[in-house]
Every structure is written in C-alpha cells, then in structure tokens.
Length: 225
Image (cartoon, rainbow, N blue to C red; front, side, top):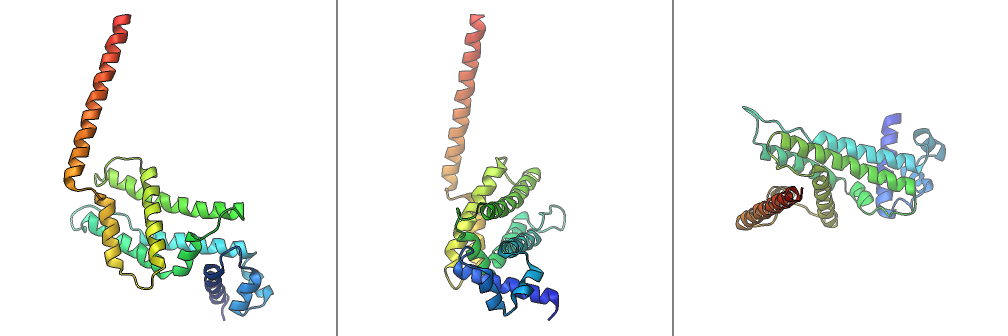
C-alpha cells in the first residue's frame, strides 16, 4: 500500500477510536492494533498521538473552508439567501457525515491537557473567524445589519454546535429541513414581525430619551460656566 494511502487509513482508524474511547483514553497501542501496523510504522507518519489528532483538526478546517463559498452579488448570480442555503447545506452534510470527528470535537474533556485544550479552542476560533468574515462581507454588501460580528459569530457557532450535538445522537437526519430551520433562525430569529417592530420603536424611543438627557446635561454644564 502506498505511503499516503496507508497514512490516511491510520487517520481513519484513529478517528474511530478517538470517537469511541475519547482522546485521553486512547493510546498509540490502540491505534496500531486497529490499523494493523507496526509501532515503527506509526512513527514514520506521526510524532505521537497529539500530532495525529492535530492533523484530524486540520482536515476539518480545510474541508469546511472548501465548503463555504464567498457570496456573489450581481447580474446572473443566484439570490444571496440561496447561496447561504447552499453553503449551510454543504457544511452540515460534511459535519453529519463525519460523525466520529463530530463526537471528538463536541465531547472533548478539558482540563487534562492544557496544550490540547488550546488546540481545540484554536480550532473553534478559526471556525468563528470564517463566520465573522462572512458576516463582515454581508455588511459590506448591505445584506446583513451592522453588529458586533465577532460576538454574533460565536453565537452562531454555539447554536450550531448544540444543534449538531443533538442531531449526531440520532441515526437519520434530514439535512434540508435542518438547513431551513437554522437559516430561518439566523435571518429572522424567533420573534413575530409585530414584536420586532415594537422592539425597534422602543429602541428608537430610548435613543431619543438618551439624546434629550445628554442635551439637558450639556446645557446645565454650559450654564454653570
């Protein structure tokens, strides 16, 4: 078997063991037994268990990046919402197809290995950065309201993580329905239009009151002078 094919096979076996036993309870002996390779062969490909695990994380980032396409606006281009729907569909299809990796990332126990904890957090930070860049682009294109895109990106990531954690415990998942629910929630939230109008009106009133208070305060200080 060619070197790269064997290496990929070792990664595949390791992924399944990590998902079943957890990172901290898996050792190199488990991996080489499952892959049916010699210990020396393992070390031809990877320095240690952590090195292998980090490569699995890199694979996920690469695959997700490939599935998130930049939105395009202009004549002949699909509707932006359709492009968002396609991006989300590709991402969810990949994540739910890779249930072993999903289990590893969602069920990782922190506190045992600070360096590994940092690697996992860095993984999530990179995914949040992808989401944030999409939001920033949406604002530039006047498709997304102005907001603290970093905070919003982590809110989106957290919601998707929990939804995937719930779905990954099931056997059958209908991707298109999931895409629609997440997309609808992201674009509209859960409020009825009437409530959103009331919130906007309330916010406008509060802003007017605050401006009035600031003006009165300024007049007071001017009068003191």
